[in-house]
Image: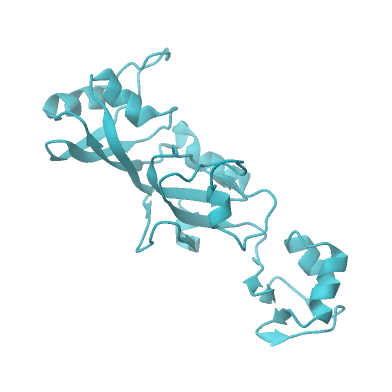
Length: 229
């Protein structure tokens, strides 16, 4: 068990002195009750809340975010809002993105402070399925299904893409399931077929979806979801 001020400093970006100030000001709750004793002993089993934000017990964060259009997958950006900006309240210094999306692509983005977990999500050898809903400029047909299932060569690559599953939903729309994540892969795959992606939305990663999130909202992954990778 740790002193309350030390626990806060260890599990957040606050310094020990800032933690003491917050405790003294009555802005710290332990298991729902205000605590002003900075020397109070707390453990990982206690729920500690600072300025209205619950400090994670495990030390690692696992989040699912619905990325809106024009938000960038970066930790910092001088021009655009970032996915990190949207999860304000999670104060881990090393929160990073497990699988990026382009600025104009919407949908599921996973964020975590667990580097090994992130690697398992993004590494092709783990064959994590990522499902994208798309709309194209020109009609698509069964030839796309066959070519994507075989794997196609992309400009600048020395190996063909891994087999991908394409489900046609309409003349110009469908679902594409990938198990890898090359740079701009979906757009480049359709480009190799002489087509263009007009809109792109990631629906799920490894069976983890957006639930009922609205753009810009997020939720913490369950233990079951975390254990999938």
